[in-house]
Length: 251
Ligand code: SAH
Image (tube, rainbow, N blue to C red; front, top):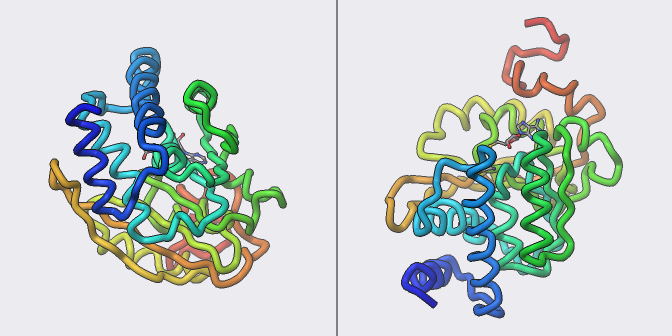
């Protein structure tokens, strides 16, 4: 174990995470790091490639999820707009019992994720190429998941419509956000209500080394998704559900 890995393990302990098979799991994080950097030369996956920065801003940041939800008590998780695998793949490596479904609209990112899943040796991870608006219309994904996550995908008013349809009644959606969320949170209240959610908690965190602020917004699903949602692909982002947006499609 080198210094970067020791620091990483210490920080995970601060989040209450203790790796069950540390040697194996640290090797999985390292293999994931190597693939990320290698594939990033051929396609745009991340602007962060320095090793300690990847451990902090991608791996640790993804695992802050553990500070708002009990992952040991979670069986299924869907990660919407996962990109290069965040937050779901670090979460899967640290909590191998999870059944993970990843949805991303970009085929080449899905190819990368499939490569990571097979060469790192992760079981029970399904990578789906598709738009969240279409995937959540299928009964096997609609109102199904214990936990749904999204990091750096869209503003919360739009994100709610992409993510909440996947959450089972009684389950949780966690939006992983940056430093400034006051306005975005206010703007999202209408969509939370329309999609049968309720905001449970908003937690502020700080990256341990780099110091920048993060927010985790925790939304509980209180009932199944109304038939009208999600609207047609593209609409959630183009015309987010905010007060006065109506549902007629006129802008
Ligand atoms: N969650 C990652 C990636 C963020 S980039 C991270 O934190 O690093 C946003 C990703 O969302 C992109 O990969 C994009 O393809 C995907 N995305 C955007 N809109 C989407 C939609 N409607 N359905 C599925 N994926 C979408």
